[in-house]
Amino acid sequence: MGILIDHSKKALLKPEVAARKCLATPLSKVLITQPWLGELCFVIGGGPSLSGFNWSALKGFNVIGTNKSFLFYPADINYSMDYNFFDLVQNAAADPKHPYHQHHLVWKDYKGLKVFLRRSANLRFAKDIYYVEALKDRAISQDVANGIWSGNNTGCGAVMLAVALGATKIGLLGFDFRIEGKQTHFHDGYYYQKPDALQKNLPKFCECLDSLAPLLESAGVEVINLSPSSELKNYPKSSFEDFVAKGNSLYRRLEPPNVDPKVFIIGGGPSVKMVDLRGLSDLNTIVVNCAVFDVPNPKCFVTKDYTFLLKVPKILDKMGGQKSKMKEKWNSIWKVFVACFAHGYLKEVSDVITDVRFGLKYNLLGINEIIRTEKEEGIGRDPGEFCAGLDSGFSALQYAISQGYREIYLLGFDFNTSFGNHYHSWYSSDPAFQKKLESYFECYRRAFSIINTWPDVKVYSCSPISRLNTIIPSVEFSKVISSK
Image (tube, rainbow, N blue to C red; front, top):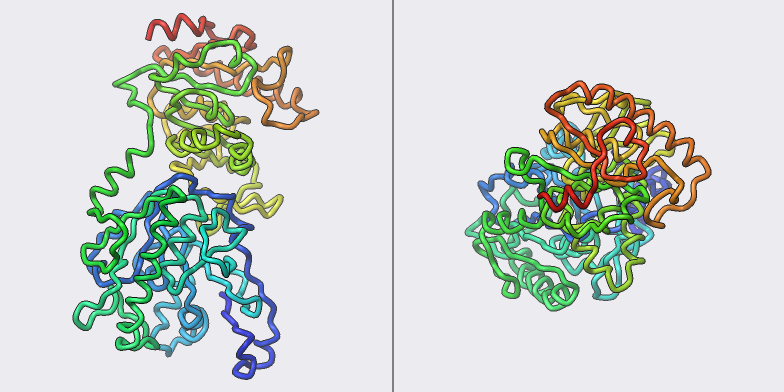
């Protein structure tokens, strides 16, 4: 675990400690740009209104905790700009005799990203800390690589961090800015913080966040105050339950198989350009990689390609006048990532998936569902038998089957480069693509030798140029759509 060192206080440090270098990592080095693009996020403050809160209700949502909230809920990120707090949990409380030693043990086991605001290059952190630079100008940042304007309190900075991560709907929990009797926080507070001094500062903290309301609104960010007793004036209020109910409507999921037994899976082959995709708008549709931007109203996105997730912000930036619409489409879809551990280059340590070949830590904060499997070859009928295959299209097919779909239509699964490698131009040319395609096709051929023995599962090819037409039945896309 690392030690927070403020080199402006060298005289108070042992020489060997003061000489240490900053081993922390900029947050932008481990997160893709705007991982929560257009998504809902909760920010946990410290107000007394959170006493007795049902923390399990946050499971599955994007969450930023602040300061001591890590003791109550393992948020994706725990953010602070309080140097005393970090010195306490990181350093002083490491002593087993320290009254806050239990805090240190929980902090050491915390699996989220420990993020600290760096207001000066003189501040030094250890390697398990991530930092975001402080901006001097009061402005909205939409990229953590550029830093954030933090305001005068940790809660304000956490909101600005959520915005920089791409969140466009933010629920404030425990942003009370008031003391209830003798209770300053929902936890036991901070021994170095006197109640009288806090009471004097709370109005300033509240005013700082309230003053950001017009700026946040102009940036398209909706902030909702979920505290039943709060001094904030400029943000609409809601109950937690109503906020969650409305937030869930952001995602469109597949209809259950017993409601709509058909599902279409759209890949990236040239045949996608040969049909009118508009007929899919009211149907169950799983899209693979770039197809998410071209299929109308897709319900589910599947990939096993982490590099594609890294490309999404860059692709959106090139959308021109369609960027806003495409962002909304990307944000409203249920996103599934398949992590295949079959070859040993993917490892998961402390809930973080890492490609050890490149030391690349996967940031999957914006993903709704992560499927982990050690199986690549074969095909399974149930989630526990999930086989990833060699490409994202295969993972999408396996996902549809594992979800209970028994009537599946494939488009863009061509394995035929006579009309080009893909229907789009988002990928750079790959000299080895043809060789990869042959491996992919063989993987499908082996899987269909199993699927074709299942009398209740029917998979059809809707591509007139697909090599799969020699293995499974082919149907005309327009006729399937017209019979919906």
